[in-house]
Length: 477
Image (cartoon, rainbow, N blue to C red; front, side, top):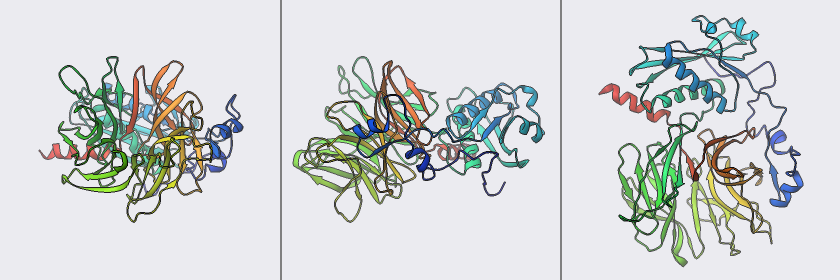
């Protein structure tokens, strides 16, 4: 078990963002109608981030899990999660004859596997059962790691989450990096009657559920939008018009309790997000010449603090993981089109533009989100006065390098996954609207949910620790 060392038969596909620069960011893919010249025309100085076809990925085989139908369900979830991680080529749907207690490394080596995942369910498959998962290094003929994951009743909505936690453990054991399976995405969904509430879905597109039903009065409806997750994954902050004016609320997903941010000054309270401490919430107040970005400590119910203030509109604050800086978008250039800025939380100073601003071609850039790795900021924008939006990523410490991640349709409101490698965004294609997930290191994109008017997605942190803590508390009781 020991230190994680990755080595394969062929050059590994586990290059990080920095190592991918020469291949991913500097190689422009000559796709029909989307060449380097087209990207330069739309976004001056922006590279087109696409799949570098010379990359290879390690092969992981998922052996049939032992323990009946519950084990089979868990196996299918784990195999799907590993495929969605975009880190492996997955061999699954393997004949039951390969489900042996003793691992024959030579056999799996002949099948071309670099890694092998085995599993079994102990305890009969009902509530209180345990999923035991092992990862084997086929090339070195050794067990890499093993974990035991409590399973709730198979009919519980949390059953899938337990399997997702096991999937993320596999990614962590092999790559020493977090996975994305044990996470959820909350978004604003507009219904046919015009109502707009918050909905939530697992990272694999399952367990879709509505989490708000805000109403302005008996005959009307309110709009709920701009959600953001607390660092512990237990609360969501958002903007609602249920009072008739946009105000900021916090919803506890476990208890249903809701708090509101006080409104000591007039104006619209919008685009909230948590600071990394999980106690304070930042938001914009649009109030003419007294507009700005402010924070409020919801945990202690006190203490307004000012981050920016002026006659311009500063909105959509997002914070670096260490809490020392924040990014936001603003129309403070006075040209009528917002840009993305960043600045220190403390000490003042002038904000610096990180979006691809070019004089006389101001563009339109909005909805920033700071990566949990701290190295990148995603947002969407366009260079034309009218036209389609695309998802862009600015690298924080690489001389302002900007990469375009989408090539077709209209794409808005990107939000980072807990691994800092995947993004969810709202997109529109010829066949309709959907939420999409893109792997920024390979360009692989999948549809999360479709057939609905979904907007403003926000990706949760990993929920593994939250569910582990809840499970321990239940055991003590």
